[in-house]
Figure 1 (cartoon, rainbow, N blue to C red):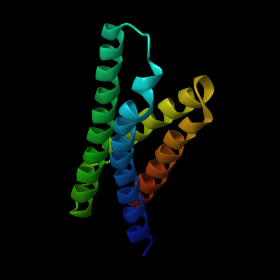
Figure 2 (cartoon, rainbow, N blue to C red; figure 1 turned 30 degrees about the vertical axis):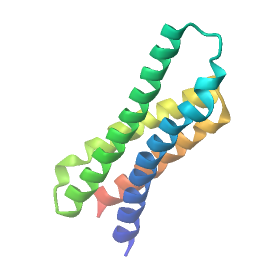
Figure 3 (cartoon, helix red, strand yellow; figure 1 turned 90 degrees about the horizontal axis):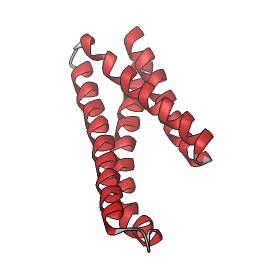
Figure 4 (cartoon, one colour; figure 1 turned 180 degrees about the horizontal axis):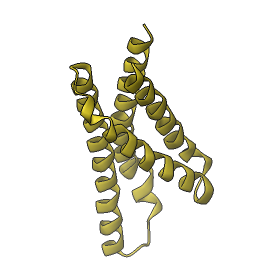
Length: 125
């Protein structure tokens, strides 16, 4: 029963990361681009490229986690390093974002902690 709970938690966290990437991408046209009025067009182009690249990276990490979840459910125990690495990245980004940018970035730290807890539980079962 607990294994199913933590498996579902792992999958849900992975899906939230993918959906977060889509939300991140949608913010460019809704909020960010308009805030850059008066900034040199080349700088805006560079920022747009970076913005969408980050969204793509977030989506890639989320999809990698979903693939990992699928493989772990089929008995592959050699992939647990993937969620640990993604979780460390999200934790570092979340803490730095909270300290240097805004409290909103605590979301990334929470996702990392959920990933850590579910991965640890799945490794133990």
